[in-house]
Length: 156
Image 1 (cartoon, rainbow, N blue to C red):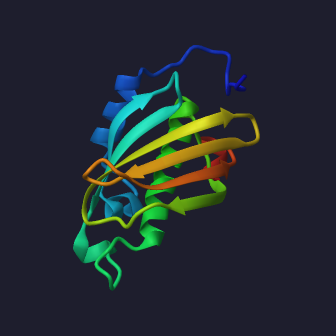
Image 2: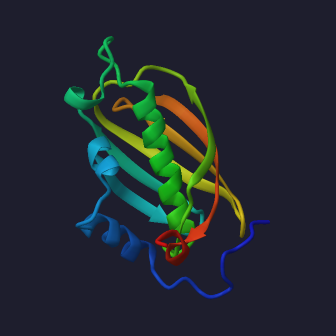
Image 3: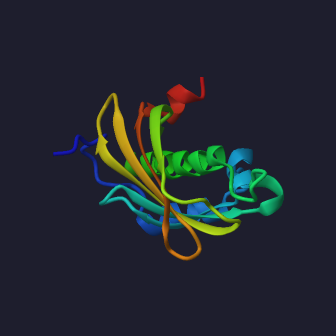
């Protein structure tokens, strides 16, 4: 049974959160570099689906594959955004640790990421993420541990 951040009803709908991400004028530069774009939000399952535009001129290693660190950054982004959604857009969740397994090389193009919160507690969140290539095949999976932190506390 998952812990919940608040007993109050959700203030924002999934559609409102998605619109907020799509209309933001303050997207972090890391998200911009990765070509991040939110596709869907599901607060009930604490899951997000995102897209990354993996540009060859920015993200490739000498073998013309996406460098593994960028794949990790994409997975971290999926899982972190899922935490924001799980909190009802009241908290961030800095990553404490992350484990990534790579299944195949990533090629430039549109990659799809799925992030979910497996358990959301007052002091810790357990996260999962998957990253898929344009062909729909699994590239990498990650699990992580994060610390839920209210936006007001984080901004200090």
